[in-house]
Length: 182
Image (cartoon, rainbow, N blue to C red):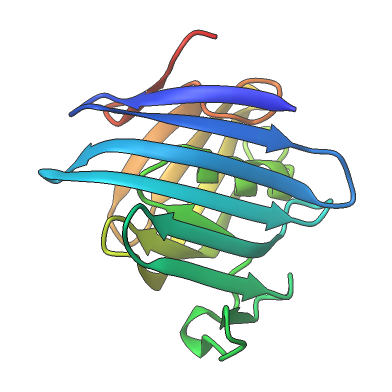
């Protein structure tokens, strides 16, 4: 079990995340507390992945509010918690939750890129606090294996170089999040 904490660089808040990589299921549980776009928030999320880091389930609950649940078959087919298909998310394997740097770990671990290798992928973007989903294109490039990756939001034209630790967890997300010392 690995535990990490991040803080946003703008505004107040903290995320505490526990990562359990014991197979056959990788489980991530996290609590987010803070301010985002002048809105106080508290969220709890759980992500379940198979041994290859492919998302099979994500549940996000807003404190005192709604819950979002998505299920995936690891082949790019998604449904809501009641089994209704999400055809708009077809082809996505990974997710990107807007309020956390953790979800960058999913494609970094799953893609297993070699040095200077770049891959464009579709992902399920989950906007918080709105709890909306949409399919977006992103790219990851391995600059230094197990140490530094370039993230590109194709849709947003945003790029950041992300230093990571040995578990693929972001250490610093320039301008957005910084990892707190354990």
